[in-house]
Amino acid sequence: MSRLVLVIGLASSLLTFSAFAGGDPAMVSTSIADRFDFPVGGPNADGCRMSRGFNVHGHLGEDWVSAAGPGAIYRAPVSAVANGVVSLARDFKRSWGNVIVIRHAFYEGGQLKYADSLYAHLDKIFVAEGQPVTRGQEIGLVGNAHGLYPPHLHFEIHRNTSIGVVHTSASRSLANYEDPSAFIMQHRVLRAVPGKMVVDLDTYTMPSYPGVPARPFYTRNAVSRFAVSNGGTRPASPSIFQPLFGR
Ligand SMILES: [Zn+2]
Image 1 (cartoon, rainbow, N blue to C red):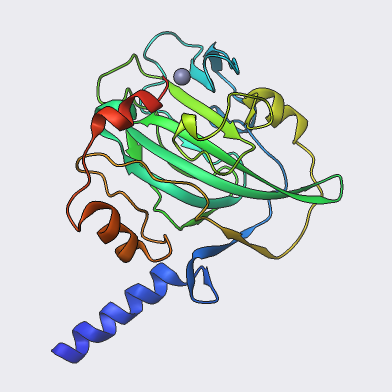
Image 2 (image 1 turned 180 degrees about the vertical axis):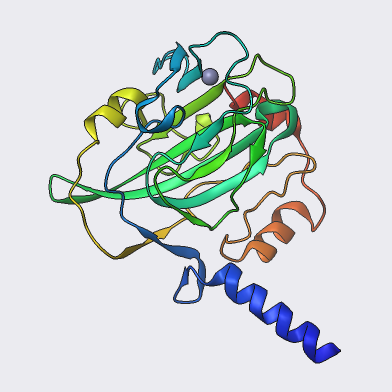
């Protein structure tokens, strides 16, 4: 009996950690992005429209809804905009609802570059932190941040991979944030590179929030860092966390 449990446990950990490279849980391999697509309405945002645009000094992403009218986007599929690895997938409750961040590696002008795509207010999450995803893969459903907003997808692309979900981590500038639609339109044809690339997911600080684990499971030395900063207890301080989020 105990042997059976051990075998099942081993098999499931192998499955969970098969993407890790070199035994470091923060280093995960991904297919290199061959192009970027829109996150709703298939590759070309068919049947969808932007209800609120990007402004580097205000709204740091885009809001997407259905062209069919208010509320019609609710529970529509959300797709990964490109190949990558999920660096964050969790429920931030009534501040931002369910959020996914995906890290992408791609070649542009002969250079290897990285970008993070962020999908917020989701009704459902279908992926886990550390999981490799492919372009067009359904990662969740459009939601309303637990009833906080009318249904829409809040979508961001970060050039700076130290932002994560904390907007105050970097200054509001085009050096750190991309105009999402413009970025997608400029990255529809990329150098196709077969094989995998190892990316470091442990590049941004996770906020603390009641009921939300402060560290992704892949964070290096997660246990010791957690113990030092929080005395081994659940992190608190929504007042620190909440103002960091935009709609
Ligand atoms: Zn928004």
